[in-house]
Length: 198
Image (cartoon, rainbow, N blue to C red; front, side, top):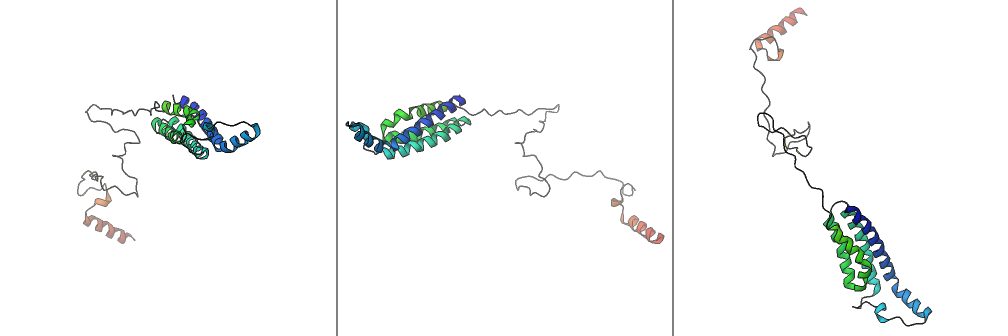
């Protein structure tokens, strides 16, 4: 459906823009035609039924063509009703000024009605996988950043709860495994022994 809207949208924009060009030059063209051909042009061709000059209708038709092009691209991008409104509303304005313009803008109105049937892609929710304990595993999506830890140097949001640091396993008070956790008397004894050796 999107490609049908794209095809008819381009045709409708070309037709609406050419109608705008015709209405823009209508006053001059009709006056030249009357002088050169020598026959009288009917009054309903020279004026709008409500008395609006053709030049004003031409401006609305050219704006409708521009909005129709934008609306065609938006509808092709799966935002159907937004694109349809962009195609349809300026046409109604031109039709209010000169109902004869509906002859040229009918294809754009038809395309706008087709664009209402263009729907966005459905959003699929992924079910979290359960492990053997019944707890849900963490999702690998980029969208699920709630549990992600911020990178170093970045501020944490106030809403985030701070997780306590994991506790180190307790070691014997006098073990020689880690020099940083030695009791104070041993550190002093080692320092004194190093001074004596030097």
